[in-house]
Image (cartoon, rainbow, N blue to C red; front, side, top):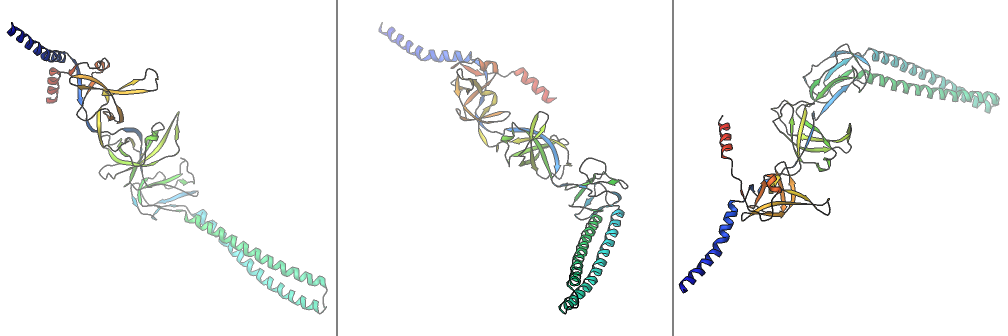
Amino acid sequence: MKFNKKWLAAAIVVAVIALPIIIGKSKGESGLEVDISDVTAHEIRPTILASGVLAYRTEVNLTSELVAKVRSIEVEEGDIVQAGQLLMRLDPETYRNAIDREEASKRQSEISIQRQRVTLQLKATQFERSKKMLAAKMIDQNRFDEDKNQFELAQVELKSSEEALRRANAVLSEAREQMGKTDIRAPISGKIVSLPIKVGETAIPSTSSLAGAQLMQIADTSDIKAELKVDEADIAKIAIGQKTDVYAAAYPETPLVGKVEKIALAPSIEGQGRAYKVTISLEAQPKLLLRSGMSARANIFLSDGSKKVAVPVEAVITEADENDTKKFTQYVWLVKDGQAKKTVVIVGDSDDSWQAISKGVKQGDKVIIGPAKTVRQLQENAYVKQKAKDDKADADSGADEEK
């Protein structure tokens, strides 16, 4: 009887120890199938998408400062020119005539001054004689006053002629300056990228798109930048120095590396929206044929890309507070000992694939990322297991790759 009691007691102990293991194994085998991912460190690179155009950093549109016909064009589109080089000649005849006219006016003023100086000298002599004769009482006061008035009037007329000469010199100088503007010279060194006007057409001083308003365009094609339009909702996230990948329309798969150089303070209004101009300085790309005006899209990176503890974005669940819909709680489902554990987290930066976690998880933890329907129905401490891979799908995928 004692023997039976001892065996009974041993059997109870074994059952107490083995039963939870058997039950846990049973539950583990029948647990919910989920997708599980390890918590690791990843580069988080959140971005803002923007579009715009490429533009030469140094670009000059030459326009005429006077109205004149184009007499000759000394360059062709695509030519390399140096600063100060003669590019075009306008018809100077009208301005040459103006110079001749003003030179004649100047000579008249000079002759008038000579005449006034002779007259002044004569009037000065008569005035001195009158003073002596008045003192000797050989003339009356009226005659003296008349000679004095004539002397002072001659002084005024001489000053008037001198001022007329100064005016003639100024007008002549202006006419010569206008004459000089008939020779169009390069203000910078660069390449002729546009030459819309032809010999015989009339150049006009205008900044509009009228025919003859633009003579040519010169640019330094070795240095190019991107001018992007960033929506007002995103502009507060943009800062000087942020790295940017720009994709020109001609090279959609080749990133042009650059960084934010300038951010406009005032927006441009387009329809119902507002956008701010953001200038991107680009690294030199000598092998690419980039041109001003090319449309471009860009990814502006909002962080330095350093590695942070992160989980796939689909693992983070946001839940509104029942009492205050403006408050939210974010959590993930961790897997511990085969069970799902709801864990509140504090999130950081995110990109299209990864969400940084600043508090709540650590590297090496295992987090449930799907399926979405299963995750929504999870309960605390529910038993879960890694979803089995579809062998048939893997085989098909491998066959496709071989093809």
